[in-house]
Length: 60
Image (tube, rainbow, N blue to C red; front, side, top):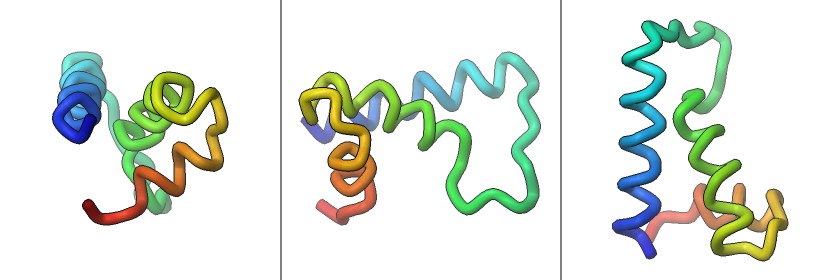
């Protein structure tokens, strides 16, 4: 599961980079992390975004 999440994160970051996306200087997490959480929550947490957010913030 961790390898899949890392692959999803890398893909999200690559997409943002290809779009020449600029991050907001005030943000606390990257846009790639937000996108990854939005994809991972339905896949691994039964669509519960709060559980997905908590799972993403825990060190493995």
